Image (cartoon, rainbow, N blue to C red; front, top):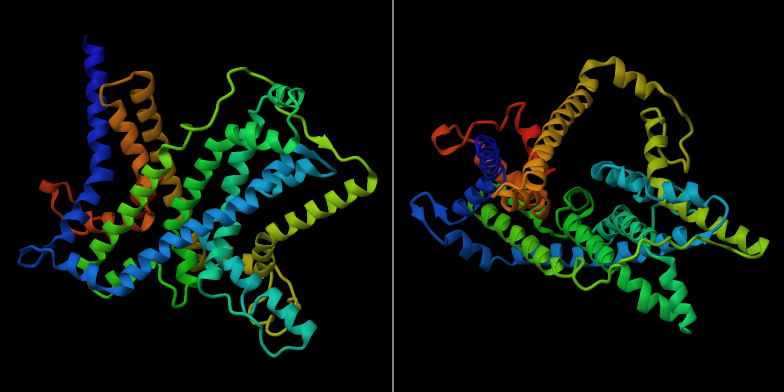
Length: 436
């Protein structure tokens, strides 16, 4: 009996640690939202309800997230079907290349879009040179710019999810539908889409949550357009911590309601194949001209999707101050990389980022393995609670957790489980750990 009790004790200890890392900081934000200098108060909530700019930011976050889902799905779903069901020259290479935007960090992707499509970017220089314009005919700013970045960076969720679902599809079901007289359109809507609906819903949920938590794109391209993530940071920087706490709680509530709304559709209304069949093989295109046209169109689409990656690499090779009005940079060099490596003050941020990320990764792997063993293999009593605590950080926007951790660990009060970590080396690895 000692071993099971010891395992149960480890389970309870892990649940307590996770609750301290995940739930306790959010609880402190909730407390601070209804507390003022003189005690408990609803003043912050009242000001939140009365301010139009706060409601504008909340509504902006909501509709931007919904439209981002539509844009990402419109781009990602056809690509998934194309590379899964149609065979053409270069299909295997392109199917991997179009998934590369998932590798690009959010801030790097935003900067890449600025250099590519901004008023001083490659496309703007090219348009000005071709049409003889003095300035670019557009401004990469506002809701449209945010949606452009979101659509590009988040279509990968639909692409990967749908491709995985199509790979599990049983080709015998398609053959049975065809033998019963169903055409391609009817088979698509009556057989294929119900089978991939859980994947569609999962990708939509992931896209919505990622868009709701987006900060880099609204911060750089937002201009006068308000979203709640940037509004929270602005309010806090202005010193209005009470209102910032209420805004943080409101964003967390929107995220949790969205998670609850989507959750019932993930796997609940779709169909699941019981037999282990063979996935449909990609169909070759008949006719040489059709194959060449399809391959050309696919490569063109892949190049457009990979242009931000290429832009980052190209701009990194441009000497400082040499690219001004030309459509294409006139000179290239590796001196920027030499400077980065040889000058300690420039290399230090990269080293710090890699070090902190490595620390957080090691801790996250260890914590996840321990949680998986206790909750799934050993089936401790608090297993469901451990699983819920492990998944909660994904459901809450990163800005919410940033404010929560900054609130929880901004003072030293060991008796209440609070330690002064803000401004130290440990706050960022802790934030990365909790968030991921």
